[in-house]
Image 1 (cartoon, rainbow, N blue to C red):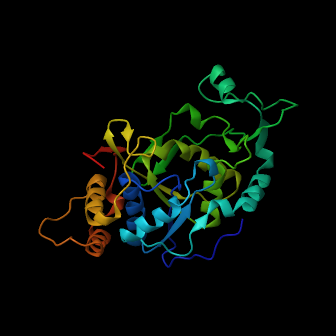
Image 2 (tube, one colour; image 1 turned 45 degrees about the vertical axis):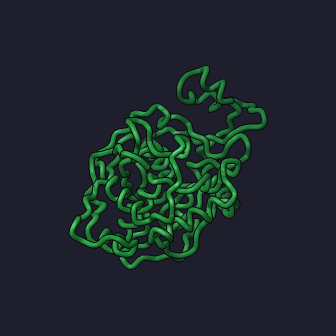
Image 3 (tube, one colour; image 1 turned 180 degrees about the vertical axis):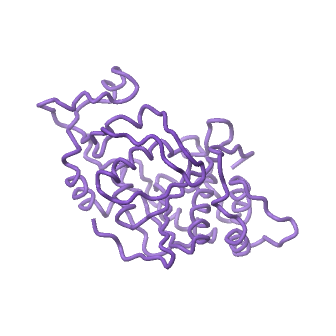
Length: 298
């Protein structure tokens, strides 16, 4: 894979990669803010990628709403926005390079569920697989222990982390695991700041980096903002969209949710003042040990 020409004086390249399935909510804004701050505090680049590969779930115009929200909150990205929907040939090439690690699978979700929680490798040695079929990665050496910048030594016990995961779906769409790793390698991303709700996927991604002979990035998993234990702010849980007209209030809430205490005596009544203060004082690398934070409201 050929990397883009985006370089950073410090060598640091981070990114924010939302899915345009709706506008940003407070939880996703907090993640964007933290990844932006960490990049700027590291004298690095902050890239923006639209993960619009799952086209049936994408909402028309949501990408523009996301861009507007980021700009309204003082979060300006470096370079051009990368859209996954425009990178299909590159994903096909990456998938072809993984041929020795893959196999076809025509199991339905109902069949997999009937046999157990995680996929059991049913199609690994089958000679004939009917169409339509998915393409799975033969996950022979799962990486279940890794070092996280914020959480320290992490052990993943989720059974789905050891299964042969899908790289291309039965409906012909490329799967998240393949495209996210392919894009991070292509864009030269070497530091990934994201929510702790994605912690378990790291095992799959590390396996792909190894198979592609690519250097693994540094991971930093942030606390997830939730309204109650196990109820993270998300589109699935109907978290309301952030209102760009009250960006100052949103930034205050996002910083507080991440665990930063804003000074009462300092004038932080504008977006630029908050971002300037946060770049100097809200040290993202000091956040540690917490995977979920309860917030009063979105």
